[in-house]
Amino acid sequence: MSELNSDIILSIKNLHTYFFTDKEVIKSVEGVNFNLKKGSTLGIVGESGSGKSVTALSIMNLLSGTTGKVVDGSILLEGRNLVDLSDEEKRKLRGKEIAMIFQEPMTSLNPVLTIGEQITEAIIEHFKISKSEAIERTIKILEEISIPRAEKIINEYPFQLSGGMRQRVDSYGFSL
Ligand SMILES: Nc1ncnc2c1ncn2[C@@H]1O[C@H](COP(=O)(O)OP(=O)(O)OP(=O)(O)O)[C@@H](O)[C@H]1O
Ligand SMILES: [Mg+2]
Image (cartoon, rainbow, N blue to C red; front, top):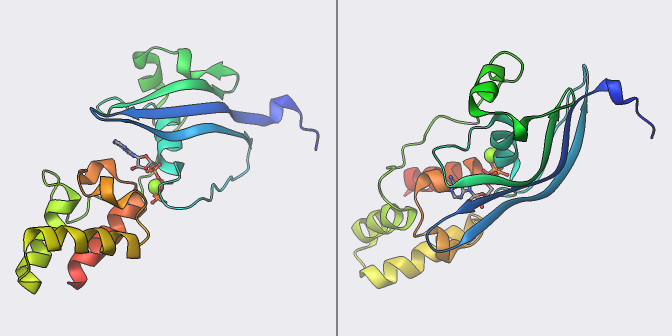
C-alpha cells in the first residue's frame, strides 16, 4: 500500500525500550514499527506484558523516574524525532500535541511490597501453610492467571508489572 508521507502524523521506527534493573535487563519493546495517519485511529493489540503501555510511555517520554530507557529507534512526530528533543522540549509537547489517557488507577496492591509478599501473606493467612509452601503456591497461581516469568515476578513490585498483570493479581487478591 502506498502512503503519502504527509499523511503520517506519527511514525515509530525500530523502537527498542529496555528496563535496567539491578539483576537484569528487561527488553520490553524490541523493534516496534508503525505509522499513524492523520485523522485515523490505530489500535495496538498484544498479549499482556508484550509492551503496549511501554511503547506509549516511550512516545510520551514518561519513562523518567523508572529504570526504562529508549535504547534504539526513532519516534517521529510530524517529522521531528522526539528521541532527540530535550526533556524541556518534550514536556512542552505533552498535553498540547500528544496526550496519554492511562489504563488504570493504581490498584489496591501495596506499592512497597513485592507481588510475592502480598500474595503469600494472604495465602498463609487463609490456608495456614508454611512460607515455602505458600511461595510455591503463589508461583502456581501466577501461572494460572497467565502471568509470564512468574518466578521472577514474585520478587517484583507492582509498578514493575504491566497494567493487565496488575489487574489480574489485584482481582486474585480480592477473590481469596
Ligand atoms: N517500571 C518498570 N520496571 C520494570 N519492568 C517494567 C516496568 N514497566 C513495565 N515493565 C515490564 O515491561 C513489560 C511490558 O509491559 P507493558 O506495561 O508495556 O505491557 P502491556 O503490553 O501494556 O500489557 P497489558 O496488556 O497487561 O497492559 C512487562 O514485562 C513488564 O513487566
Ligand atoms: Mg498496558
